Image 1 (cartoon, rainbow, N blue to C red):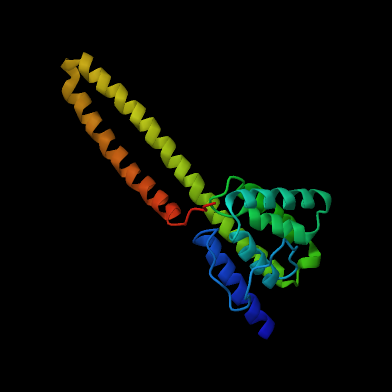
Image 2: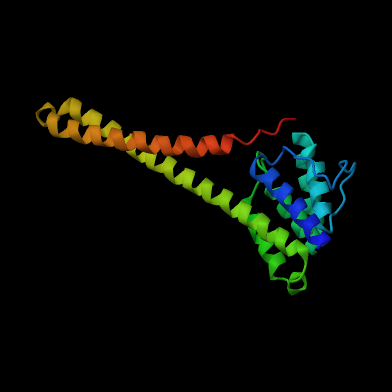
Length: 205
């Protein structure tokens, strides 16, 4: 029972940190200091400590850490290195973030029958859910931005047409007004998505 409480405390703190900014860290009562060197985790507390460690790195140091972990995984594709790499790939505001690759790594981990009764399975499920939601929001934003660009192009075309076809001005003016209303509604949606993403603190060197 005590072990389950430790898992839940660690996992919730880690996932909250990821959700509200991959590079800001809410210190865990289970972890009193960040490790001074990279160490491959093997339990939830270990991943919490590792997350604390990478959150303290500058931008360049974080890139080097990713390169090191990625190379280590290429040499030895065990479950510990798989989860460690997935965690790094899920960090917000990094140049190497890759939700699709992280989800693929977690899927491989969860497919291993040896992890069926491990607490790390629950941790991997929580991390997968977080990454999938972030990926969904990114795709939604791209879709809305694409629609806005399409409407803006159509709007410009109608404006040009209005200038050359004054006889049809009333009809085109109505179409123009309707498109402008749709465009403003889409921009409100886009702004809402961007504000949610920008609420995450930006990683500084």
